[in-house]
Length: 385
Image 1 (spheres, rainbow, N blue to C red):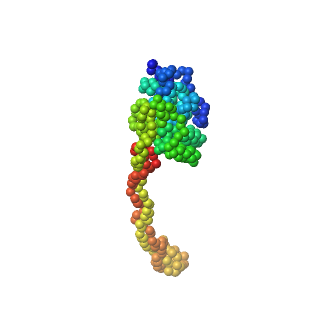
Image 2: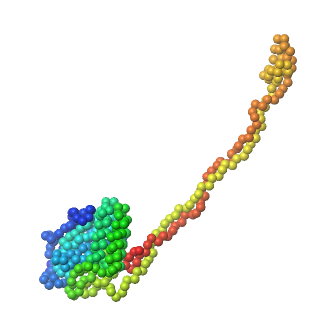
Image 3: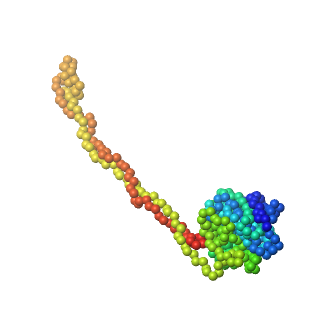
């Protein structure tokens, strides 16, 4: 058998369900045949996929949700997968399947244009290159309220037909992550989003699904449909390639007879770990006013000596003898004078400033750092509350 790879192709953007558009690509005519035979039809065939999403983060972004459908309606389920790595989704029989993606939402409220592709199933031989679906990023300020509400509605619909990555605690945590990230976008209708993701959480907690999962070679229904690590929402699946860096907050599933199944023997117990951040508080000050410091200085009155004629009473200070001589020469009788003191400036008090008024900044409390609990995160599965 030739190990021909499934065609890797970036998705072109077209019209569709979201206002931000829905991209699609059939890929039927150009995709090389995957290694298979008549005996493969009942075997554990897989879809090898790699969803490329620029800016997607395993720790903070939601996973991608893939809707898997075959042509005759026997296979119809949703599964959560990680972006930016090759994953395999078990579909049982060979054939061409329609893969429709619900775009992930990043921690800043940005998302991607929805996309779909026709993908041929093949054996999971670890040699086949996967179909590459490239999602076009939409910045947070470009995403509309209706786009965000539509994603929340699609998540609610996906949980109803989800495999084990979308049911139980895993599914509830995934729905909550979508809610949290969508609400971080200022354009989001918080009430509408909470309504839809709330439905998804309640459905997930019922731990049942209407999913039509594929028949596998051991004759049992495949509970998971996917072998992947969906990132931070605890899908608990296996990846075909090792993740770069941390594995996020993913949980773990069990594998039996070639298919991944939920662990029915031991219920998962959350180990809640407080998530904290440091909040800095600046020092607190108040303004205290200090009045000016002054004192009073007395200034005595200023007086001058004046000469007054004894006969005519004239003020002859400027030339007393000239006045007398002039009087005698003109038949007058002015012959003497006396002195008096005249006040030319009254005494007064002067206010002298010893120290000008001033304002003082007095510290009321010192600067300090506070550790604030922002939430809780399960150290095992990554669920948050």
